[in-house]
Length: 305
Length: 218
Image (cartoon, rainbow over all chains, first blue to last red; front, side, top):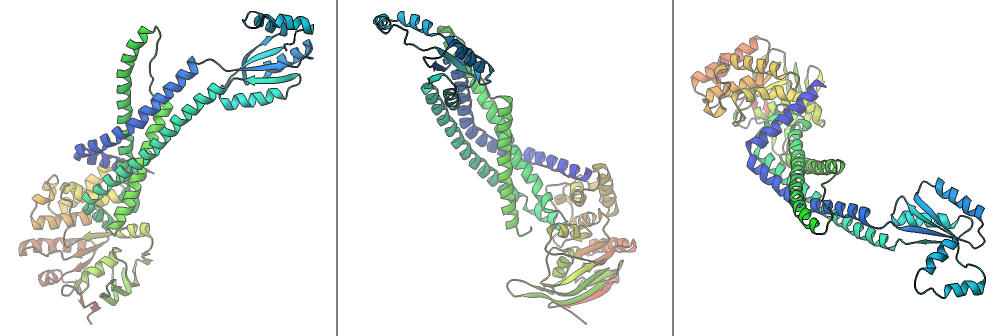
């Protein structure tokens, strides 16, 4: 175990020495990765901000449960208890048929309704519950609608989820674009890492041959290059993260100025800690993969391994 | 003890470098493999070291046979030798100290402090203790050869495989090298030397094995 740790520590040291020996080429490689990665990262950050803005500023979709005309007070009570027990519901309120009628009276265009009530001899409107779900995703709203329709004394369920569906579709399109960029970025990262390691192998050909002759294992020869590729991805991601952070700071200053004219506060936030970590792991992983392919292919080409 | 059983080496172009070689080298023995250029001396050393696989036959050291298909075992096999190459194979971007350190780094069994002690002891043995911070390019041909020797010895191998140790050296440097080799042999190190330097052979007084066009001379 000690020997294994020592070998890795030595590789770590060797990798940093190689970076220090040729800092400019490493920095240029890093900047290629960082600048390219900035675009999808910035787009993703804007998308996240847009999503959170929609969640905080948009009206909450409501589900209306219209009861059948023969529903009695105890039926209303039973339904109220069921709604209270349901974990998918944030809040709800009851609208009796009398409340509904009086609120309709207040609206223009319904003056003939009182005549209709007098003709019918009864209020034709049903009791209703207006429900707000905890999750406003169209999928969840549709699921709740189907569940409510199965409840006794519920004659009709109405959900206003069309706008939610439209926003979800727009966000899906954005996410799809981010994923497309990410796949392209992964290929770019692998390519840059592959080519950098290929040049490294050509530069250190004599050293590789000698270490092989002196009894170095495949892992020993590969390890410094794998570290190099991993660091290339990792530091590229960190640099891109910093670039986006700097860009956001500049944009936030201008946004704050603009927002004062409309009397509201808005600021763009960077990625969460978890997302930032995922981005670093993603880039480090693909840097490692590019290095692994390059080492396997190019050292094999030296006819050593 | 090194036992070479019926080893043949044929290259893909059809050239046969070695043909049905049988050779036994006892522990602590000094053996010189002699012959003209192209006789197969270096090829034989490479096969013993596990660098080049034989087309047929086997190499057995202390009752352990080399498995040419397992890369990890081949790497372990090579670590039991001290190797000196005709073209030195020094790393010119690393100091003398770090060149000698390399075999110990590969083995990875010692801390850096222990490695540094071993490196300095090996440099001291070959008379290069004062040059540990120098770059190999600043050393003379004889000093570079001694540096190779320090690198070959630093991990205390029981067998030294040496290819043309005195090639391109003048008589004084060649004498220094042969004296060093004799000294190590007296400490129990087995020497297997490929050379056609008669002065070295007469100084070492080894068992000579002659090769001619891939065959051992009777």
